[in-house]
Structure formats: structure tokens, C-alpha cells
Image 1 (cartoon, rainbow, N blue to C red):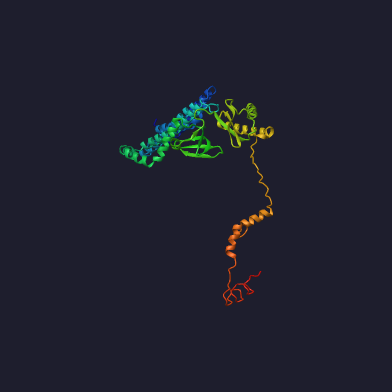
Image 2: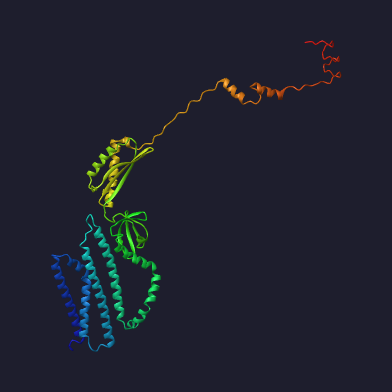
Length: 414
């Protein structure tokens, strides 16, 4: 044993440790590949745990080699530092390997539920919950590993009692400071296990139609129909109403509406609808109805109800039905197309007024004249005022006899 506690012995021990680690990993890998010929889980295990297993095994065998072959002339401080470093590396690699095993178990559970089936509601529910648990597993592994590493330092071990004593106050302060973040964290956990939304659910949020693409502990990503991403906090789905089109099942009912002329033939449209639905695989065969839902004013409203297996298929089916019925009306029933009717009323032709009517209208517009009453009114304002001449005899006839006649003989003359 003392012959190994030399620098060459340490080098040989390290090489042997590395070779041993390589041999062990090769044997384990070969066994898993043999099992993988009949099972699918070894492939998942190799993909998830290959790197952390190799690293953990290598650190452990090197730690053993150093503990056995480290020369005695190494100072205690260096010996303790090397041992402490290998311990920290072993803790980190071990936590990584343990987390990889947990992820492998989660993937093994996910592999049992396929999403490429028509009714995948339960599979999406399980997948959502498992993905949330995976994130919690990663967070827990990081916290545990960091705590284990910190506890390897003697100074932190001595301060552990005081840290535990002040944990209540620190927790209250941290809770108040991170109230929004903690609310989103608990909301994310609630969404995962309350089954309110799942991955690939079709939802309508903020007047946007899309699918749930990702659910994290603090936010949810909605893939909008035009390839935009709407990122919402987890508290949005626990505090505000939203539409979930695939809450119970993915089958949906949709409508297509037309405003047509009164001469439309609902029976003809219904026959064409049946032909369209029978010729497409977008329709799931559950519902295909054409009804006249309104007939007031100048329009007849025709509504078509169709069903499909999911929301994208329903959208394509509605567009197809709308397009084919419009083509049918243009080709075979043009009288059904909407029209605006206008009634033109011709006013009577004006007649030329007669001369008497014009005169009567003119007389009616006069104040004086045109009628006896108006003539009398005019006479009152226009008759001559008598004038008495000043001739000296006072009779006004100019002959000076005072009888008023011009001849002066007292007889009137014409």
C-alpha cells in the first residue's frame, strides 16, 4: 500500500480509475442496448442519464484513487482542499444523475400517452402535469444540490442555526417582496393540476385564437393562429375568463351564415350542402344542418351548422362550405343572390297656368284693386280732395252772382 502512495503510483491509480470508469460505462451501455431490442425504455434512459452517469462514475473512482494513492508528503491543507473539491464535484454530479433518473421516469410515463390520436384530452392533461413536475424537479434538484454544497463548508455549518432562527423573518420579507412572482408560481402549479388548460388546448384569450404551446411555473405561451406568440402570466388564467374550445373534447360545432334574396331556395341549398359534406373528409358526420333563421326586411338569413374533429379542421370545413355554396348560387340559382330594391315614383308634370289664373293670382297679390272691396279701399286713399278757389264772392263759381251758375241768371246749364 505504501508503494502506491507516490506520485507515479497516484498517476497509475488515476489511469486505472479512468479505464475502470470507461469499462463500466461500456458494459452498462451494452446491456441496455441489448435490452433495447425488446423494450423502448433503455433508449430513454441512455438519452437522459448517459452523460451524468459517466461523469458521476468518473469522479467517484478518481476520488477513491486519490484517497488511496495520494502521497503522504502532501500537506494537510492541500489534502483537505483536494478532498473537499472532489466531494463538491461528486455532490453536483450525483444530483445531476438523480435528476436525470427522475426525468427518465417522467418521460417513461409520457411515452404511454400519445398526442397523435383524435381524442387526446387525457394525454394532454398528463403531459401538462408531468412537464410542470419536471420543472419542479429541476428546481428542487438545484436547491438541494446547492444546499448540500454549502453545507460542506464548516463556516456555513456553524451559521446554520442562526439561519434557521431567522428563516421566519426572511421568509416574510421575501414573500412580500416577491408577491407577484410567488402568485405566478402557485398559479402555474394550480393550472397544472386543476385541468383548466392543457398543452395543445385551443383557447381564445385577449380576442386572439390560438393553442397552448407551453406552460411554465410563471407564464403560459399561446401560439396564435398567425404564428405569433402571446405570453401571459399564469395568474391570467386563474383570475380572468377565457375560452377553452377543447376543455372536454376536441370536436367542435361551427356555423356559416348567408344573407340572401327572398327568392332563395332553401331546399336546393340543403341538397348542395349534403353533396359538399359527403365529398369531403373534413366533416366528421355528426351534424350538417341548413336552416332559415330569419326573414325580415329585405333579406333571408340562412345558417349552416357543421361539425369537425378539431378547431383547425372546422375552420377549413366552414371555408369550404361557404365557397361551394356561393359557387352553386352563382351558377344555378342567381336569383338567390342578395339584391337591393328601389321603388321610383314619378312626380306629376306641372301645367301652364291660364291668363285668367295668372290675373287672379296677380289680383290676389294686390292690396288695392282687383275686387270691389279693394277698389273701395283704394278710393279711400286716392280720391280728389275738393279745392275752393279764392274769387271774392264766396260761391266759388267766378261770376259774382252767388247762385253758383256760370251764366249769372240763376239757371243751371249743362
